[in-house]
Amino acid sequence: MIFKRKLYNKMLQWKQTRQGKTALLIKGARRVGKSTLVEEFARREYENYILIDFSKASKKINALFEDMSDLNFFLMHLQLETGVTLVERKSAIVFDEVQLQPLARQAIKHLVKDGRYDYIETGSLLSIKKNVKNIVIPSEETSLTLNPLDFEEFYWALGNTATPSILRQFWDLRHPLGLSHRKIMRDMRLYMLVGGMPQAVETYLNTNNLQFVDETKREILDLYDSDFHKIDTTGRASQLFAAIPGQLNSNAGRYQINAVLENQDAQRVASLVADMADSNTILLAYHANDPNVGLPMTKNIWRYKMFTADTGLFVTLAFRDKQFTENIIYRKLLSDKLEANLGYVYENMIAQMLHAAGDELFYHTIPNGNNHNYEIDFILSRGSKLCPIEVKSSGYKTHKSLDVFCEKYASRVGERYLVYTKDYQKNGMTTCLPAYFTPFL
Image 1 (tube, one colour):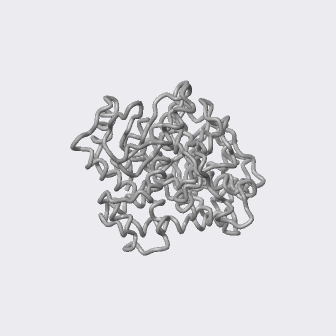
Image 2 (cartoon, one colour; image 1 turned 120 degrees about the vertical axis):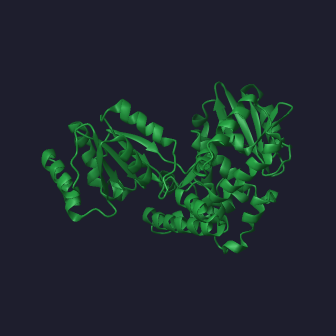
Image 3 (cartoon, one colour; image 1 turned 45 degrees about the horizontal axis):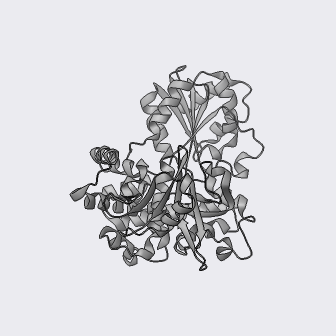
């Protein structure tokens, strides 16, 4: 299935404004839909195109990149091998899974300068050492990242284009949904379970069976395990990834490396975690030590929380050691019976939503004097003010952490939000909003 993706418009903007002056690099996690999106774009926006998938390219194709001194020779043989006749300034050449052929990525510099055609690359694990060893990374790249389907794109995949725009209207009016609230929350819980990986969404649409969806997500997680072993053969990356749900559930205020890897700490695994983040399979929320409008300037690079980049994969990862039929979270989520101690599922989903909307992730803790912390789950910077967010998986309107934060940093705070499961309402100076309004913040 080909799903409508928001990134398509940004790709179109690149084509119209850059006019072949840069190549377009689409980054993203494995199985996030990069190849499908790029081929659909090439098919619709160009007279014709050549697609080279380096996961199965022939030896003859790969050998062409070993000598780029004669571009006429290169382009002639490329057309000969693929059987496609290119048209100057009306054709595109796609390098799919370009990380598997570093010489092709290096050739971008010369191909873009030549200017006859547009070039589009897709890749994952792009900065892993073996993928960039002994090559010059081209500066002639416009880079975009494809994330899993967000909540709006999920609606589109279900064939529903009306609800997202209607939700936006309710948000603009700051108006509760009333009788429609329960239905939208059911839709959101379905999104939490299925997630935004195209294969999982397609499985749901084809089968309407969450067990089959769960099996699809497990296959993706197995693929990620394989990729993590490419990053680090010792298996530490896989261990760090697998421990994400448990770490969030511990309410420790940070990802505790030494609880997962013996005799390790954040500094010792810094490059490994950076590679994991570069794989686009995880999201990192950094602790803002002195939260202010310039949040990146106050972040503690050794203190962070780790999330999975997809809510559906998070749910499966949390119960990966059990069979699907034992995963009571599926039944409880769909029936709105999720216990408070499983609220980390909501926290991961909100992290994904904020990231999809273009926000960097930051949080803050304040000691309460009893060996515990008041914790603000996320902080947004809007204009000259901070917007703190506290996330609850229930309908309770208590927000002690939010109150403490707003009192301590009163002069810096603008809007304050409690994200929860009930309908929109105001509680004093706090805006209580259902999770489905998060993308509009």
